[in-house]
Length: 229
Image (cartoon, rainbow, N blue to C red; front, side, top):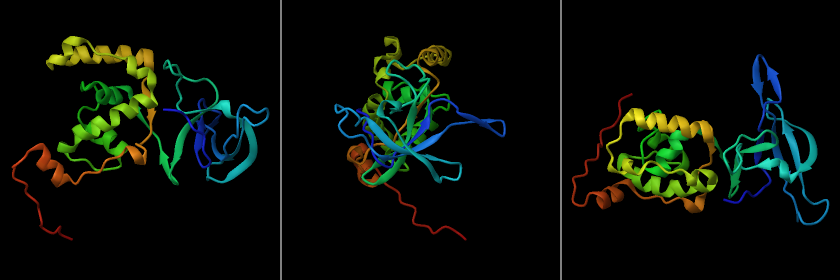
């Protein structure tokens, strides 16, 4: 996934820049004007403002476009030591905020092996966040198929991660998965920022219609009772 700098995007410093009330804080900035043709001298600058703790815009200035990154990690999974990472992006005028997820959450979707520390809960949380929907159980497979390629586009280094071939049989000891994941975390970091699917990558299917596709002829029960006060 190419990183396109757009007006309205919000970035956060990759490393803490201050300590407030004993807590490390990061500087947040908003893009006011994206760079023009970077091949022309002097046009690789991005007009930005700093956002204070109340969200007010202060300190308008220009910085090099090379300081703005799509994620807090490099392509090989190393933590960035400088610059700013994207935390909120603009999609057809709407702001899409990113959320950090555990590496095991992401690999559960990309490998098909349940290794998320939170267990199956992550299927509903991560996939629901990316699709913007409250997913039912029978919708998870479709959502995972949609989200897996986008997760690898957001984090290309994770595409090289493969699980042991014997795991495909499905009978894997939990201890083996935890040990394998701990090694993966040591090499690729514990968390990654995840962006929701862009509008053009989302496919909304009526849950009842999808249920019929998944289980043709199956009984569908709809609870029409009104909730109490």
